[in-house]
Amino acid sequence: MTKVLTIDGPSGVGKGTISEYLSDELKWNYLNSGALYRAIAWVAINDSLNLNDIIDLEYASKNILFSLKNKKLHISYKNREIGSLIYNEEIAKIASKISSEPKVRESILNLQRSFKKEPGLVAEGRDMGSVIFPEAQLKIFLTASIETRAQRRFKQLKDRKFNVSLPALIKDLNARDKRDKSRDSSPLVIPKGAFLIETDDLTVIEVKKIAKDKVNKTYGTNI
Ligand code: DC
Image 1 (cartoon, helix red, strand yellow):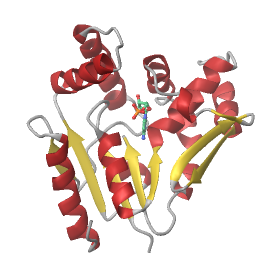
Image 2 (cartoon, protein in one colour):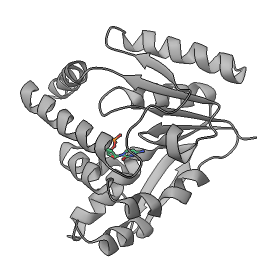
Image 3 (tube, helix red, strand yellow):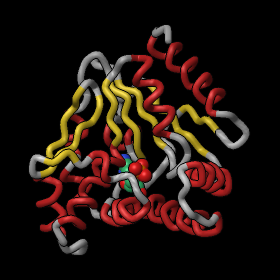
């Protein structure tokens, strides 16, 4: 049976850092499901598609090529690598909007499941443990208050010399949380039986250690 580890939680909680760390250490495949929604959002903007037209969005999702390269997600559209273009706040906002559309979610359901391959999969997102991989042996759920998440993002962006305001980031995260939790289709929920890590008072190193110990216990690994 192929092993799956899911890592879910709200925006800006550090899922990416922990998922990447664990997938690298385990040498398992890594699915960052948020990138799929971001890629659809990118194509929608790039091709001036109608964000309210489900046919347009389905067209976008069907024409993006998602594959695993060296165990990591590779995204291309019309022979162009677009994986590096999707990580900005504008795309994040549109991704959040289109991800509440059930047909968009449905259009990438089987694709997401197809990433479950040997020697194992680390899948990160909002509904990995609750909907896409309910069979996962371990479901980690990360939490942190909006203030903590906004502070972390603020620091990250400042370090990269972006001009941002903390209140604007808090407002943004609030809106995204609300949308992610209240949508009808696969809302952000703590999966049944999840292993919860409250990260407010923990450093990244501490979160990694807690997650790693739990992974080793669950899968009998030694990372
Ligand atoms: O994790 P992220 O910020 O890259 O995700 C971008 C958006 O995609 C986020 O606002 C919510 C949505 N998303 C989702 O609905 N379900 C997932 N499994 C992953 C992301």
